[in-house]
Amino acid sequence: MSTYGTTRHHHSPAANFSNRDRATDYHTTLFRRLTWDGTVPLEIRVDPKELPANSDRNLECYFVQAPRVSYLPLLMPEIRRFFMDLVFDETAAKDLKDEEWWFETAEGTLVKWHWPIGLIYDNHTISASLKPTSSRSSTNAIPLRLILHLASPPNEKLLLSPSPEACKQAFMGQLKEADFIRWGSTKRMTGLRQQDQDGLWEGIKEHNFDDYWRVASKVTPTTAPTRAQSPVPPSSSASMVNRPPSADPGGPSERDGAYNVRSIPVRLYVPDGPVIQGLVPPMIDDNTPRTLSHYLLDHIPLLFPASPPVPPPSRANPHPRPPPVPRPAYALVQGIVMPLETEMAWLGGCLAGADGWVNVCIGINH
Image (cartoon, rainbow, N blue to C red):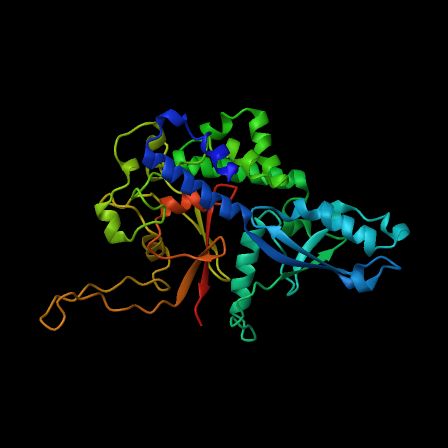
């Protein structure tokens, strides 16, 4: 549990925290830690047509439980070591070049190597569930099956060489874009020392939660409590009564709070559709927190229709509730089916990826 204390000290001086601030900061760090520790199963198989001569075809498949926040190029040393030690013939493997290795899914879809592994997994899982032969009856995580190609990368589609250095540059670019979306400038990111900027990537590379958040806490907004006893986002009706303290004048931690940013960095991934990105202010017009329901209703109302009004009370039904609404779709964030009443600012502070973005993947209910 010491990791919680380590990260907590870097948001602001401890003496400035109230008891509610401490509780919220602890819970925020808890959710960030759970997100960081999330993993997905991968099954990596070399394209049989590209196996070097005299390779051991009985061991051509490599399984790994990969961190959600990591990237495929960062797995390459481990993958290479496995295949070089156990599969490839030593003499034939000498001509292989790591910079020419690239991935496809088993269905032949080019893998976006610059996406976080968790996002790749969630998108593929949703796309696979839409196929007639798929089944969602199993509760076990099914490995994402990837085909590793050893030559002839389609550079015109990959855009950049899938190397760790290119991945680092793409990652830093995402962090700076998220910084601009939040605050209207990149001063927080560009104001970091080069050593700190490199430390962010090293934290990802080594999968070290404390090292990463020691720097990330300087640019990532805090989550002010919507209620003292719980970090879980309340329903919309509760939010109207319990206004987040960050929406009121306060200290430095409140001014830097998730409810006071200009916009939340969010991308919406629709199956076989475009990636949707736009400004997502944390509060709506009546100064209550914007929820996931508000966000999805604004962007894809056909999949997330508005709830009908509550019928008037009657003698037979003195406390009516709105009639249920069929939900043709669901929203997945970090592999979790997210309640629609979740506040977007809370998602931005607790469940954003290491690159600063909240990735909302849309699945279709059968």
